[in-house]
Image 1 (tube, rainbow, N blue to C red):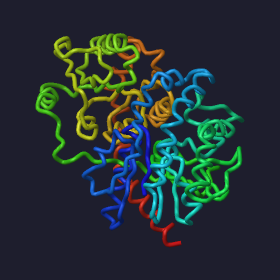
Image 2 (spheres, helix red, strand yellow; image 1 turned 180 degrees about the horizontal axis):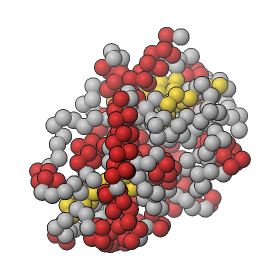
Image 3 (cartoon, rainbow, N blue to C red; image 1 turned 30 degrees about the horizontal axis):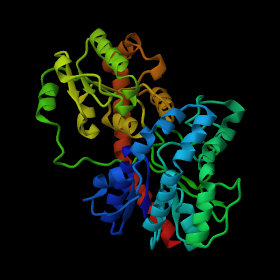
Image 4 (tube, rainbow, N blue to C red; image 1 turned 180 degrees about the vertical axis):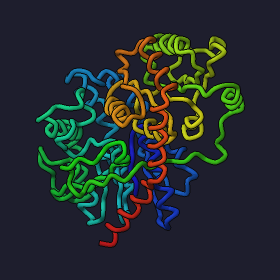
Amino acid sequence: ALLTAGSLGDVAPFVALGRGLTAAGHTVRLAAPSENVALVTGEGLEVASLGVDFMALADSEAVSDATGGSPRAMLQAYRESQDSMRTLIHAAGRAADGADAIVFHPKTFVGGHIAEARGIPVFLWAAAPVLVPTAEFAVPVSSKLDLGPLNRLSYKANLGTAMPYRSMINEWRADVLGLPATGRFADPFSAAGHALPVLYAFSETVVARPADWPERVHVTGYWFLESDPDDRLDAELSAFLEDGEAPVYLGFGSLAGRDPGRTTDVVLEAVAEAGVRAVIATGWGGLAADHAPANVHLVDGAPHDRLFPRCAAVVHHGGSGTTAAGLRAGVPSVICPFFGDQAFWGARVAAIGAGPEPIPQKQLTSERLARALELAAGDAGLRTRAEAIAETLEAEDGVGTTIELIEAAARS
């Protein structure tokens, strides 16, 4: 059973793992948010809906206000999400019924509890190193990437995100699994008091393994979901790509919708000042096709593994999946983070030499973005380093490594 929740970036890696497990002869049931069920359907996997639309929940006023907000706003968001989380917990539990092994996203909560009740192998997944403390860097969702002696302690706050749902999880443990309640300060991601094995689905080329991580932490490499062979770039985009030098790609997803006018002005002014051609993903709105200059092509979206290798550089918000796609394409990345782990990925891309220093969205100006575009699109050293990283990632097999770990655990 594969249990995942969140955005498309949280679902796509699980679909990739499901494909790999199916090809290896396993029967797979994948539980996903209701809005992503269509993505999973047709993959040869048994599909289960969690009954919750995570994107609608994330776009709700309470949750939006809680992002980077006050404790009071966060408490209100938790209160308004209670019914949705209760639905999710019960649906995820049903999806894992009869499973011989479980891989689960932290937002689905239940994997460790089911493994405790049934004595089956279980793995906890994350796309960023947010679950296991290290002294080398703060939890990647922290506002500061290095808190010195407080680095390890910062991970406690991240694990505390499950605490508001502890009562309903304990109720479910008792009613469905027949297990006693967990303690108030128990690790929410443990089984029978033991910390779970963790699957970090990124490359050690991007995040070197800290010396103080325990053996239960596995850095598998990325779980890339390949596009359908028939999922090609549309004719107009293909024609634009072929009609001049490689463009830069710019896309911030729906996150930029908070101030679409400003984002549009900054992007267009930067593109003009840098003198580059550009493909702009218009997920934030605010830019109509008939107002785009001749050197700009607008797209609603396009498969990253098809588009990014044909670009001179990619500019985005720094989501883990988009960051991985940019690195795999072998082109420099400019990351303009909003919140969460995005600043961490921006710092990592710069540290490994695959792009310039990130530009936080609050500091994003047309002048700063133009300079970053000129550097990313024109610096031969950045391009060479990005290409070398892409070769390393291509040689890795995150899904295959993960399947070996699951099968070994099932045999033991």
